[in-house]
Length: 300
Image 1 (tube, rainbow, N blue to C red):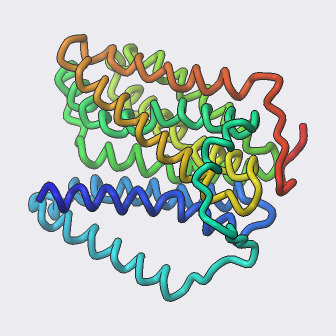
Image 2 (image 1 turned 135 degrees about the vertical axis):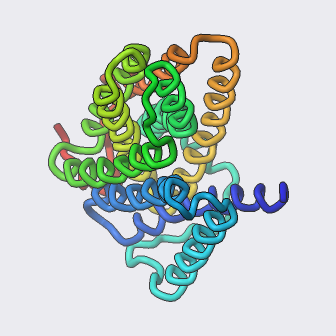
């Protein structure tokens, strides 16, 4: 069972950067919009098991696993059969292991990557502990907000914000959309203790806004990263940033797990504000000038 679970995580992680590379191969312009819809689909898929678990099907854990696994396998078959390599794909001439470290010598790549790391510090810990937050609120207030359904709804709303952010990036640029989303999600981190003391309506609205803000910047950071490197290194650049970002999310999840046993549970989400604050600091630096290999972003 443990081997199967490890394999699931291993291969799921491989889908994310390669999927974005495929999108980059199809769009010479408007990659921010394309990634907004692509990551939105990923976020909706993340919400799907929670939504199933909130129905009568969720009473049988095997049904949840079988349903999501079958849909995933169908997705792989459809991708293989229906999606050829994109017209703008440029393959590397040889395997270059030194390319990764060299990318961080680029100021734009490094700052986009660091902004993404701040985003990842918050996102997956927020998702993982949303059920804990709902249970805590129910215990404090005496309400009975359905944990799986509400968690699924909060995550699913992130798919909407990814799409909206992708469309908005066409006019305002990926950097500005990422800054706005990071600011709102960071503010939600800081006001989270007060949400636990509010009414059920305020708590649910606040958590839904947080769910939308926490994901809207993800595709735009990927666009910033992809456009900061040469075409033949886009896959490498995206994979490195994704890998380090997911590794960082392990730290924040484990930290919240530890703090939940020693601190007031209403205060543990404050620690997530470190990520958005760090990300905003990186994006707001004057030396961060968006210098793309595919000039599809506003320059102001």
